[in-house]
Image 1 (cartoon, rainbow, N blue to C red):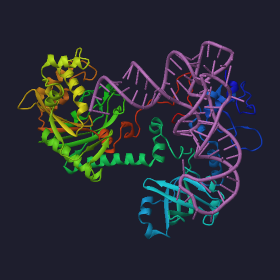
Image 2: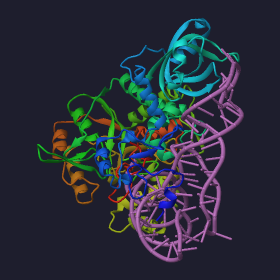
Image 3: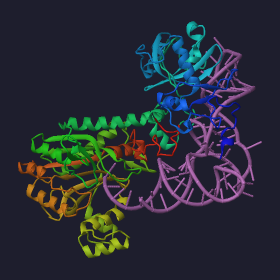
Image 4: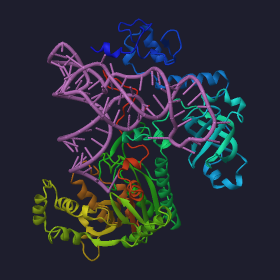
Length: 557
RNA sequence: GGGGGCGUAGCUCAGUCGGCAGAGCAACGGAUUUUUAAUCCGUCGGUCGCAGGUUCGAUUCCUGCCGCCCUCACCA
């Protein structure tokens, strides 16, 4: 046993007289240096208290989350309450954005201003202390002087780094000329019971940054900027489609039959209806019902869910833009996509158009290159004809692809993905796909083997997918039935008769589009991992330990 | 799901060819009226991811498990 090691540094036995002399969760060593016992009882949760009355092996018991806050911060909290200074007041003076103060520095110098935010970088000089105050818009130095803060001064140490405060004071500069608010009033807005991570490196562990995004955001200006940029992208997408007269709609996330894409769904259940439901893998089939209903131009930006692998490019829930426009076809949609990228360059990229992504520069200013799927396939496979099934099969084997039990269109497309996709640095539109891999797209009038569909690729990554929507209900039913024959868990288990019935009422010819907002954000912000553009990517939970295991304090609450 | 890597203080990281666990920053106490990675003096802080095994002795070696990262598969 390691009891000896475990006891290292403890000089007194725990008063609870446990057999080991140590009872960590209940009796903690004092951190102050005062005389007297080195052990003291700390306030704790009722659950823990019940355990500790017997003191039976509580060392491995997980305490309340708040048991993990630092002693000194807790003591400061108590002290604040003793002094009747509310640590979490219901309201405080309304602050002005710091950027607004800095922007009007010359005009407002010498005047009293109010700013609020998180206190960082405390630098103490006895009768003077400097700190920085950071809000969403920026940061400014705060000067605390004893002369200006006679009442506050005695209790100044109760306000510390990472606390949220509102500062009232004169806007001026320090001796080095730095803009500074010389505080004349300090209002504690919310006491921080945990301090911020290290000030140079901050949080670098990707996992911790995702799990504790609030910390990531609060200490990294770049993280805040990243998610503000994401918001601006979504805003611009909305503005673009709104400007074209599209209607933003919301369609069901809980769907009795999943469809509109090929993917494994999450399965759930409605109790009152006793009905199995799926979280949608795509909104497509509902949006097209709205075209039947005459809404003509609709779009939705919403979460879709796919029960598949997780990687730097895949999160189980992600945000999808889908748009549908009546009286339009694939070519019109292509123009819409180019228009959208032009708008994104003008606004989100502030007129620039080149982004660096995965070590390469990409010019996102339209027009984009356009190439045929079959032509690209032949080009990267020694002139091979996509429809020449035996030779394509041989090629698939050459590439080491799994072909067993797969139909020709499936393994032929696998060959495309293996040989062509990585080469599609783009931005490039790949168009005219074989109809067999496009169950929802309209056939080309020139060649019945071809569907009117295109995908947009950048850096070998699929960004968008569009087609002239199939509106022939009989053809649609036939293709659905063909899908059902696959009997895999990525295809619906039953025919969406409701959707086919909707088509029977007549859907106008239409062009539809799907764009992954997360990937679009990755591209526009030069971000490698989807986890850095999703605020809270899915991670395994760490806060509940399996029986016999310890849930330790490193877990996020 | 397969393969590879990682897990040490609040954070960022050293380290131990098996022998008393280290630094910087943060935190705490003190000094300091112009700093901004402030400085100076002092102090606290670790079941070395978890559980077994081997051993006189395991943070180190072995096995299993948990979590994360990379990669492949699946996919957008």
